[in-house]
Image (cartoon, rainbow, N blue to C red; front, side):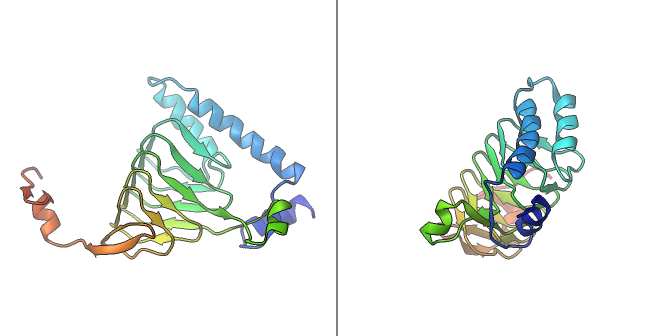
Length: 204
């Protein structure tokens, strides 16, 4: 199978073999930039921003990503909106597109996965793989250690609880938690009055 055909299959949810030598060579070039990003010093913010512009498919204004960052294709298939914040150890398995909206917050150790494998062991032993894009809306907050699986969409303004495993789409304007992640409740007027149980918001 030619490289161009493999790359087309990568972005169309079709099976392909991820051990193609030409594909690996292209991936390694992307990972070289990722290595450079993770090797930057804390005061080298301008250098980090320049690297992200070269690494990602799209990186918006005022984005901040705290190293170490782990990205399967170095961000080649990652699209970030404006003001995205990612804490330590964000892992993006970007074998196909990951779309992230504006004002999204990633807590430490979040994993977003697009790549997966067939169940049958014979296919897996040949390194067969297929990919499904992930979509994260605007103003989403993803708690520490959450895992977002291939093909999932998360609606605007929603909060994903720490340690959740998101296996299905989550609608907008909800708090969702658990394994598998399920909607706990809607975000409502109470959330503009209280920030934690009976603790009232006193700054605006």
